[in-house]
Length: 505
Image (cartoon, rainbow, N blue to C red; front, side, top):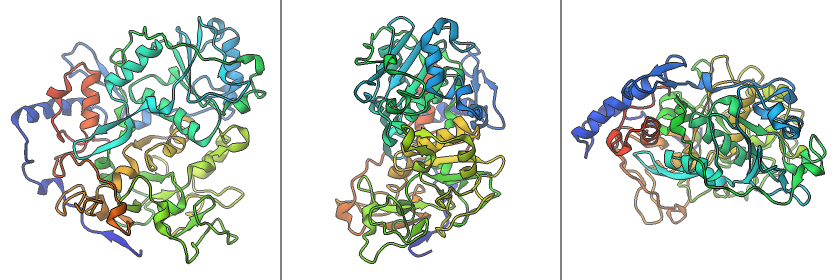
């Protein structure tokens, strides 16, 4: 493919001893290895590495996934409808789901429209809080590079539980949009992802289908809304440490993604993974092909079209990226196809989502495409047993595709949380200061395993905070979070850039 750069990836064995490595860190890696080994080869294993006091169940993507009922009204977790929420609100104590003994906590990403601002709390058993997406993300360092919009660390998720007085073991937590929009559907996905990642059981978490403008009149009525939200009490005492479950396999590092990429940019169906780009076709193709919604798109009577001669492919770049394109072997289907804008950006019926997943097209002819920019065809996308690796630019759009896969269709998913804002940074390309983001001999150059088109000028490329271009591994975040879950000082259990790779990749 034109402008593709593919070279043999350097192996970690070629690195030798990492500069700055020390004995304390090496001892810590042995401890960390005990944490992660249980997450491979099936779910439900017990991890007794924390002194045999608390046994931690380490789940896999397969055991984290949950399948929705065909009729979303029948769900009591996962994806729930306004009709279910109405039943709960009418008498929470009598109607709450089995296994839930606490209160109903609703997080709205934004205020709803006039007359439907907030799902109505009662102040005793039902509480509705305004919790924007900014509360559910954090800039973090993975040992190689610092990346924005990552899952919350342990102290931050516990601070949220304290702020809103949430009991993650006994309460029912519903992530809602407020005003329905693509952005707010992404935000409720970040809420769901953070809670599940930190071990909150699937029975305790739900995503509300559709924004307030739709559910007002479709399950709820005007009297079910209030003009003000509940006040955050700041009195919570619970911690994610109270949940003896490790769901960190829900996140994939870029090291994990590198490990599963095929040798070419073709659709490889027998490798056990489906790598899903939730962005637009214009970004996936770096402007070589456009679809409706892409800047510069001119209709040609097909689902996608070649760009006009005047098109500047740099228009698809985000966040001062050094390049645009995709990891090799990736398939693309934009997240917007999974939502119904006429119904408050609710998820489309399960059968429609399943059709997309298998490679089928909708009435407009939209379907998964591969690096040829042609539809892969029914039966040529997801294969039985595949683990889906979801990403977009910052893993916001991928919350839609990922939740639809893991929370509705019940297939195993891992979120590449660093996403293209990180992936495209890991390049031997100059930034606006004239410095190369990564040196030519760094083992973490993702440009050698990608199709891409570089920025036309270094002046457009934002600087990045590279922590260690020669780190042994890129999973510091995972190790920090596993250590926090087990009550271990992360400074003792995790070294900069150290650790064994997440073995589920």
